[in-house]
Each structure stands twice: as structure tokens, then as C-alpha cells.
Amino acid sequence: MRRVGLVAALVAVLVAAWSRPARTHETVTTTVLFDREIVRILNSHCVMCHVEGGPSFPLATYEQVWVDKRKISAAVIARRMPPWAAFSGYGRFANENVVTLRESQFIVSWMEGLGPRNAGKVFTNTAVPGTPAPPPVRAHLDVNVWQAGPPDLVRDLDPITVEPKRPDDVVRTLVDVGLTSEKRVRAVEYMPGDRRVVRAAFFTVQETGQWIGSWTPWYGFVKLPSAAAYRLPAGAHIAAEIHYRHTDRRVVDRGRLGLFFFDARTAAQPVSDVVIEAAATALPHTESTRVRAETVLGADTDVIAMRSEMLAGVKSVEVAARRPDGGTDVLLFAKDIPLDWPTPYIFARPVTLRRGTTLSATAYYANATASAAPATIRVTVSAIVRPQRR
Image (tube, rainbow, N blue to C red; front, side, top):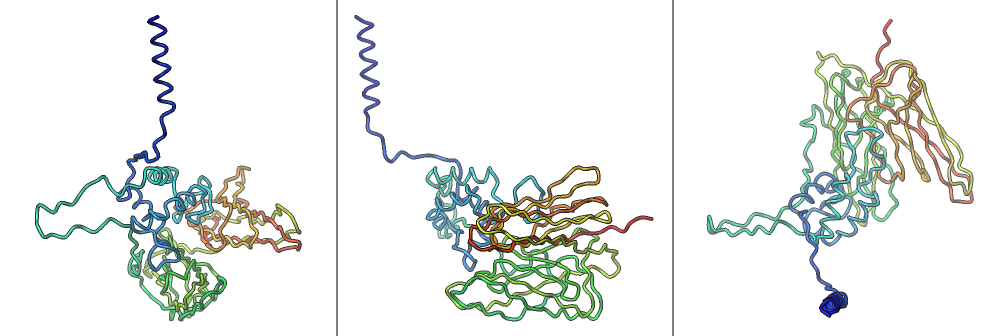
């Protein structure tokens, strides 16, 4: 009887626990704080665009992030933001702008944990009465500051009017550098006049066609390895290609270009371009049209950066190096490329390719329309081509 009574009591307890109504306001806790982990992530990956006066809605304060927390979390998990298409593991890039797995876990944990601002510290102001409370922690971006230091030469671009409510476009303009003798350039930095409308910028030497620099909201300069330099002839002009995003307001943008020179007495290896390109036709209603271009390197080459140019409909791009021994190294693999956020790929360290290496670029296109469409791939490789030893 005692055993039956115990079983009955246990059953009663389980039934009572099972039938208890669920609490609708249970608090999920987290150790991730806005003032600590989240602000660091915002400073590293977000406020370059998401800031007052930037190309997208601001995400600098606790309140701004809290309102859009679910949108932010979904975009990060789906890899839609930040706009970086290159997959990790196929090259280390100095301008890589990707949220790491650990950072994405911080974001999700903070959102699910009801987004605490800090660890509950309260400013009591008891030490020095009358002292104002410190301002709330917020993400921060230094604008109108040369990131690579004071340039040796600064040139203002011509004012460009960006009219409201028009499709995004590209404007090209020339900059007269005003050189009376040849210079060797070790770094190039751009400072847009109005960050709200500029998505990217690329710079080439008009007289030689050489690509020498670029700007994106998250990486505004190109700095060459030590003892490497671009050649800028006397009387040269720099062609600026600026990608604009139109808003609901008329904006006049006037950017500034900063150039950093080598000392005339310093020996420097010249940097040149290696271009590989091909074109094909994507037939109507096709899922995968392959476009491939390649070249064989005639000398040992140190690759510094790459710029890929594609058309609408591109699905993926791969740049690979097939070594003379038969092995293959993938230098870049990018998928779901946001063409409205063009970006170069600047290697953290130069990648050395031996003489006889086949450098190739492969792109895949999809065409869902009823008409044939062009499919192209062009990759400009900025590199030091070493002189051959005799």
C-alpha cells in the first residue's frame, strides 16, 4: 500500500507540473553586452556604412541597434551583410570585411538574451558631486581623417552632382596630378566628399591604364609592401571611377585624393598589372554558363591585389593558380556577389607565383530571361613581376 501511495503521489506531482501554464515573460540571460562585444563588432564591420551621414541607416547607439536587432541578426547569419562575397580559406585579405563565427554567435546571443546594454553598473556620482555622467557607449567612426597618415600630395576632384531618385550609376572624372617629374607612389587614399552617396571608387593612371588604388566604405586606401611602388609619369592624370548611390536628395560630392611618394633615393620595385579576361554568351533560360580566361606567367610574380569585373547574372568567381608541378592554389572564391558593392581583394601578404604558373579566372552566369545575355570576366592583378635571372 505504501508503494502504491508513493506512485500515486509521484503521478500527481508530474500531472501538476505538466499542466502548469507556461510563463510568457521568462528572461533569457546572456553575458554578451552592447557596451563591450557588440560595440566592438559594430566598430569593426558596420559603422563604415551604418553611421549618420553614411550610405545606410545608422547603427551606432544602443537604441538604434536594439530596434533593428532581428534584421541585423538575420542579415549576418545569411551572409548578406557585411557585403563581402569572398569565402574564407581561399586567401587572406587585408580588406576582408566578414563577421566571424564567434562574432555572429555574440550577436545572436545578445539578441536572444534581450540585449543588455552593460553589466548593470550605475554611475552614482558620489566621488565628486556635480560631475556630469559619462556619455553612453556608442560605436564610432573617424571620418575626414587620413587613415594612412598625412599624404605627400592632395588633389581635389571636380564637384559631381548626384541627382535624386535615379538608378545607381558610375561617374568617371580626371584628376590632373600636376607632376613635373616622375614619382613613385607607395600608397593611395581617397576621402569622399559625401559618404551618403559613394559606394566605391577605383583609380587608374590615364596614360598607362594601370590600376593604382581603390576605396570602399570599410577600406579606404591601398598601401603597397615595402620597396614596391607604382610609377606615375610626369604630366600624368589619374582617372577616377566613382560608383554612386542616388538618394532622395540632390547631393554635390567632391572627393579628395591623397598620394604618398617614395623618397627619390629609395630603391623600389615597380608594380604592374596582369590582366586576364574572356567573354561568352549566356543562352536564354540557362542556369550555368561558364566563362574562363587564363594566362601563363613568364616570370616569378608577387601578387598584391586583384580586382574582378563582372556583369549582372554572375553566380560565382574563382581565381586560381596552377603551379608548374601540377598543384593548384585557389586565390579567390566568391559567390552571390553584390555588384552594387564592388570591392577589390587586397592580400594581407603578397602571394608568390613561380614562373610557368597558369593564372586563371572562372565565372559562372545564370540567365533566366528569354533573350541571350553577355557573360564576361575581367580580373586585373596588381603584382610585382621579378626580373628573370640570366
